[in-house]
Image (tube, rainbow, N blue to C red; front, side, top):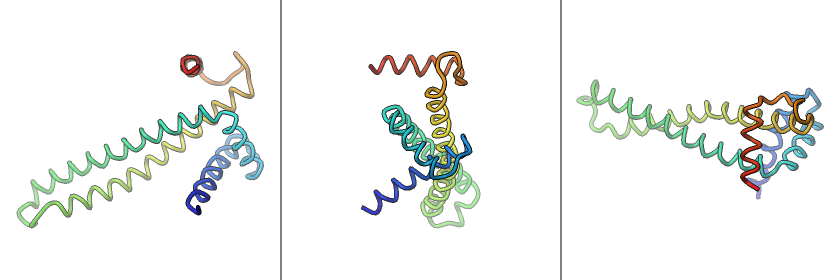
Length: 149
C-alpha cells in the first residue's frame, strides 16, 4: 500500500513541477491544476504515458545491449587472454549501461510529459486558430482522436 501511495505522490509531484514551470504558479495550486488537467484528459494522458513508457523501456534495453556488445567485442579483442571468462565483466557492463541509459531516458520522459501537458493546456485555453500548437501536431492529434471514436 505504501508503494502505491509513493507512486501517486511522485506522479502528482512531477506534474506539479511541470505546471509550475509552465505557468509560474505556486506548487500547491500547480498540483491541483495538474491533477484536474490530467483528470479531464485521462484517456489521452494515459495512452501517451503507456506508449511512451514502452518506447522508453525499449530504448533503455537497446542502448544497454549495444553498449554491452561493444564492450564484449572490445574485451574479446584486447584482454580475453587475461580473463578466465568474459561473462562477469559483460554483465557488469550491461548493468552500468542500463542505469546510465535509465537516467538519460528519464530526461526524455520528462520532455514527453511536459509537451503533452503543454499541448492539452493549450487546447483547453485556446480554440481553433488561436492555439499555439503547430498545425501538423494539431492535425495528427485530431485525426487520431477521430479514429478512436
